[in-house]
Length: 213
Image (cartoon, rainbow, N blue to C red; front, side):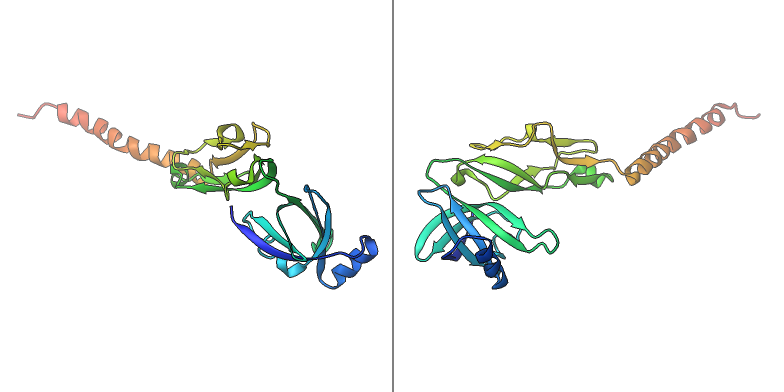
């Protein structure tokens, strides 16, 4: 899994007034926990572009006043009306200690069901996974090259070595659903196949008629 580097500044004061002043100056209040100490700091809002505002999942190399930490984003808070980033919680990565992350779901290959008029539907864009960071892939890849119309992949069908998927086992992740185009195509194909047989049946009596003398 790739990493993003971010620099932060320690917070002299922790409270609503200080947090509000940071946001006015286009900084985001943050906290790092999970290690020997809890660290309160702030990061320039624009620096989250390649970490939060992206479909990719990355670990974070934090530099806070010269101190280095390896972490992941654990939780984000946004303004209800403006969607501005208000606060970020980081979890420090510890050796041999499992973490929980949300990984994006991606597909590979071409579905024969889609070629026949079906529609590929990704019902779960991400899945929550628990395991060691070094075992975490960039994404959960689901092959769809054998999926016909009506086929689906559930959480219970997915196995990732060294990791545990925390979502309910019966949740559908990807499915190839029937569409109106596929339904209309089926009767046409049946009619086309029946036409030669009907023509042959109609010609059969004429072939058996005795020749006139």
